[in-house]
Image (cartoon, rainbow, N blue to C red):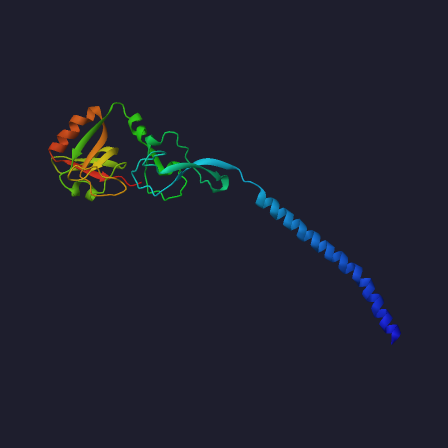
Amino acid sequence: MKGKENKVKRKARAVAPGVVIAAFAAAAVVYGVLIYTEKKLTEKEPERIVAVATEKINKGSDIYLEGPGKNVEFKSVPESLIPEGASDITDPGEFYAVCEISKGSILTESMLSDKSSTKRRMTSPVLIGFKAEDYYQTAGGKIGKGDKIHIYVEDEEGEVTLRWSDVYVADAFDASGEEIDPKEGGKSVRYNIYLEKKDVEEFYEKMESKSIRVALACN
């Protein structure tokens, strides 16, 4: 009986060092994982300065970096969070929103349009105003500042053809002549648009004859 007990004790003594070594190895692995995790957590990801909306920006609203109307600020953001086409705005007064922008969104080129780009593409741009007879003529009064419209002309036979496309709407007004704030919305019936100087006479002639039809361009 004693011989058997001694054999068990010797076996236990032989196993003990292996268990200790295995425990140390496991501890070393855990320590290594912890060090690696801590290193990853403390590593600072490269960042870039981008423009971020500080509030909800409605379609057609101008972009401002300062003043009471401020709606955008520059922030340092990790590169992994920056979407493709993030826009660096150097002259906020020259941009407007072409879609609704949620608060906290990083501004991208697809969200904005350069107001001056419309004029740059024109030979001799002029700003003209006109008033529609009713909302039916202007997409139910949904046309607003910053939109683009297509202008059609109806001939004597009743055939309607496209005459001017992607015309920029600089301002929109309600029936009483009050400018419509994109933040507040409202039905529009009066507009300021950019048109080539050589086309102004024709436009007003068609307007006078009530042969003008306007369609809202959809982005």
